[in-house]
Amino acid sequence: MKGKIIGTICLLAFFAMIYSCQSDASIEYSRYYSAGAVVYHDHCRNCHGDKGEGLNGLIPPLTDTAFLKSNKAKLAYQLKNGLKDKITVGAKAFDGTMPASGLSPIEMAQVITYVTNSFGNKQGVVTGDEVETALKECN
Amino acid sequence: MRKLIGGLVLVMVFAACKSNTAKVLPIYGNRSAETKTVNGQQVTDTVYQTVPAFQFVNQYGDSVGSKNLQDKIYVADFFFTSCPSICPGMQRNMLTVYNAFKDTADVKIISFTIDPKHDTATVLKKYADKLGVSGNSWWFLNGDKDKVYELATKSYLVGVTQDSTAAGGYVHQGYFVLIDKEKRVRGSYDGTDPKQVDQLIADIKTLKAEPISK
Image 1 (cartoon, rainbow over the protein chains, first blue to last red):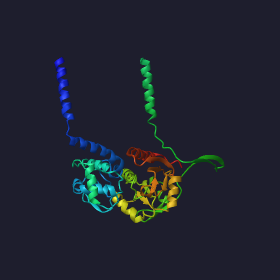
Image 2: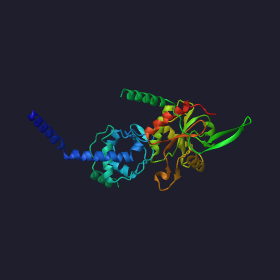
Image 3: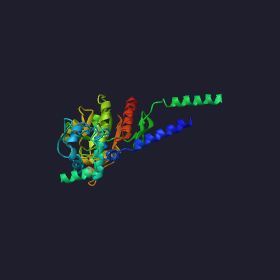
Image 4: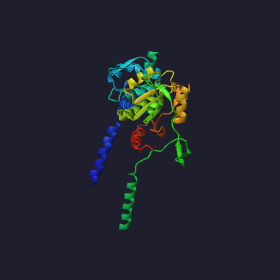
């Protein structure tokens, strides 16, 4: 009986060790993703919706994976300066205005990571350094 | 012990009965007593605050107003089409109300723009189209700015002000205001909170079932 209990504890400890042994990359991803969820809730959710569904013809959804992928380099710039041009998302044209977000580069990286890995998207982490570089290139 | 349980059951039964009585919505705003003579007898009546008459232009360019809202229950809110803050969330929730009552003749939705200079009938029509709103159950009204602001703050009890330092240039509260067939305010709900909007939908049904007091 005693042996069984010790055995179980050892087994649990072993699994806990494996579990905690995530790679640095996945820890970084989780950190960006969870911080991004908070930024999204405070700055984006009201217009783009809880599930990134947008609002009919007024506000584009964030569920168009192809759009996000092909515009990934521009996302930070659009967050920084807002958006006035006509865009086509999910085969629908949108010509409204998105205000400048007022977010810091690190917050942009977090929220881009969150959005591009939520609502049916799975595109990996975008770091603060990547955002800084993207912003410099656009300027 | 058995007596105690028996008593408890009795109390619970009564409590359950009480919650079955129909819910009556409160009547908001100032009220006064008015004494008049009816058939030679002095009768005192309570006079409630009502929304005064107004005449504005809707998204189709038609001149409409309180006359068209006679004997209708309606929900009012204040917004502007270029609003970068709470409006999209509010109108998303208002769409839920619209979808619940768009085929009900005596329930309407009125969205007053607080930026009438920009939000002309053409702009409002485009906005309604994009939102997916058609027909006449939801009107977007453009009216004289001072009149709209006075209606908002004094009659619908919703705060609105122009403020160049605010995002979008205006500050406004996101309340959905429920008005009964006698033009009285019967409820006020946070239009950004889906739970309160569900309550609004339930309260509209309660109000529809209410007998007219006149």
